[in-house]
Image (cartoon, rainbow, N blue to C red):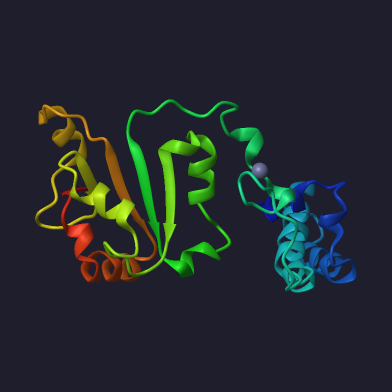
Length: 201
Ligand SMILES: [Zn+2]
């Protein structure tokens, strides 16, 4: 959203917000300019006044959860599905997204968008902080395969593109850790499983 742009449209009611105070500002501006300010300057002054003062009058977002799109998990009003491919993209590599639990509740979630673009069987999301062979035998098996890669930076990490070009085998699975840097670091170092695959960045 670009409130500046909206505010600069003279007929837009937003430009009139917050009414009295913004036109006062425009009047002051005109007086300072000797009353002969060109129309554009007066408009700009009004728009500036409106956008700065108007911020205080914006409605506070309600705390309750707004209705969400079931496909992209965005609030329905800002659903991104019209911009996503109609049919899932064809990819040969499986993705395993290891998501920190705190990441799941964030407003700007990219994983549901990614998942919405990929075939369901090619993109698996695992939410948690600790993963082990006992708790997740499937993931454990994936991590032990020689053609599985994990996307995580570090001294031992190879460049993904170069690795794919040089490697005789195409990676069957790429593991991605989703979270802040410290969350990702915690997940990477505290789960020995994730240090089995070849590390790429
Ligand atoms: Zn959607």
